[in-house]
Image 1: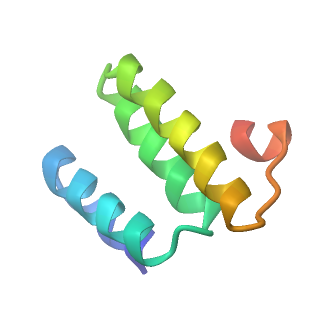
Image 2: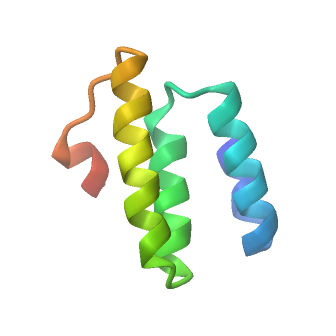
Length: 73
């Protein structure tokens, strides 16, 4: 539901939606990946790195494994 809403929003609103989604469901790797893709699509490469670093830290802390193929999808 969060991802569908983010896709319908402007860039700024999509960022807000995805940030709220990450707060509520920090274990969902799809939310993290979508946030990184959103920043990449908008040319914000510095944020992509930050999001990926935070995602790895958060997912590990919550016991979620993620592999390279899942990021690339």
